[in-house]
Image (cartoon, rainbow, N blue to C red; front, side, top):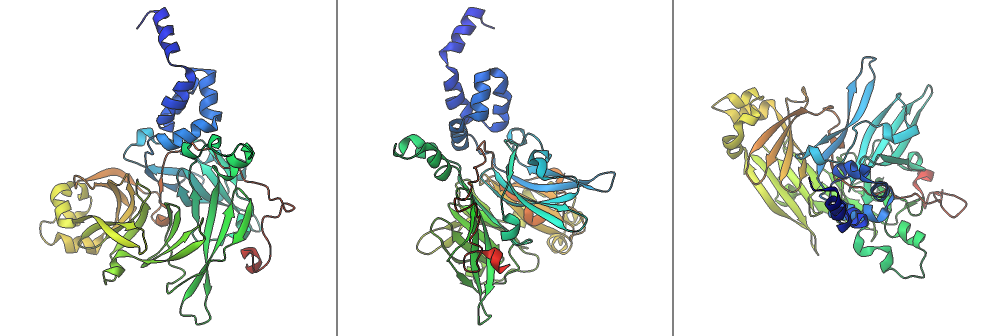
Length: 452
């Protein structure tokens, strides 16, 4: 509304580099993309400036959400796969498109997708192409916010199909910027090895001689070396190797959910161990109706949500000389129904005034999907596996439950629901191995592909 001369003066009061580096970097990606058209300088800063991406990853609201790969059946009978994002703030979640076309030339319409892991804005996606004679498997690292993707070399040979994987990725922060390192070190080396890398880790069970316990070794791919290696660390545990539901990355540690136990592995220290779940430490056993989920809270702490016939409880893992679980929140179903009974009205048993709890447990399953921002808990309610899960949102502060009015697209793919956070971080480059381009040692003692 100001005159032209005043408007120009106001614009020059805030230089464009200040706008891009100190103001735009504090905005969620979905809002920032609308600002690319302001000028050529802004467009270059937002799309090609790694320093800006670093600041944005550190300063902007993470806008946590849940993410999975869903599908719809088209008129030809084929599956159309897409990214299904569930959030309490959907207007600022930075996924420009739910379609998977940004994965590039690695895919076609004859294949299937599955989400293997999600960590700090990056996704690990598996694509299986259906050929006439055999199936070709490709593992990709992708950032749906920036619509970038790249394949991981050697993944099909080194990762067991059907077994979960962990993704390690910490966006570079300004406190460890390149300028703070020694000037005699090459900048290219610093930027790749110190600030922008990811790791893919898979726990491989190896039966001990006594066959009473299972030993786990870890297959690791590092983007800064471009190589696959087998860790020397072996973790022995009395757990079943085929019950792992999910892998979560929190505070530099990967956690495998093996029902009653957590298998953990610290990649930087190459150490691991076993942690009992909260109910095991309390001396109780999980019942058939009980369900749980592990997630990363907003402060990068591992949390475990448990659902029983009595109600729900959320625990946080406290690390130290001895790990232990601390109760964060607990609520009985009776209290929840008194506040938000209308959110469960699609459950016919909830309309009964007497004996509702026994009827509810007989007919319906309630499962925790994930915790957002340490405040909102997503719940899935289905009728004994015969219907798609209704997604409910439970507010830990108010105790209220809201029906989001949407269903999950696939009732049999629940383990692929992960937490997601906005990030403009560029995909870490994958280095070319210096030893004649070999991505692994290729011998039974040093690589899993020789054992396979």
